[in-house]
Length: 99
Image 1 (cartoon, rainbow, N blue to C red):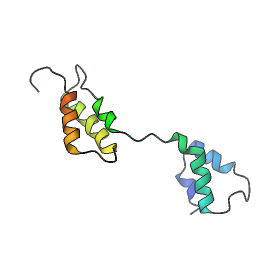
Image 2 (image 1 turned 45 degrees about the horizontal axis):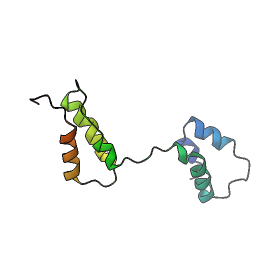
Image 3 (image 1 turned 120 degrees about the vertical axis):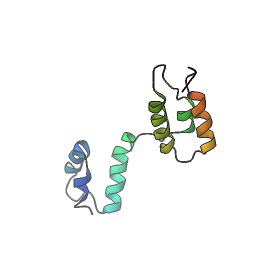
């Protein structure tokens, strides 16, 4: 697995990997810990309920576009009830009359 690992890395991580000194990594677990310690800050923070509650349909944004970005965000939240999601979706709709 350690030999295949470099093929899964991007440019920056691959550069880091190649700069590791010989015999500095003793096993898969240590490689994982070193990698995580180095690159964990690059990870996007998880979405929360608040991500949904602040979403609003733009003034000239079609409902289809708003719905698409809303449900993409909903699917990125680990656990969120559909009832809450539907309520906040409706709240974020622009009041322009007909849909």
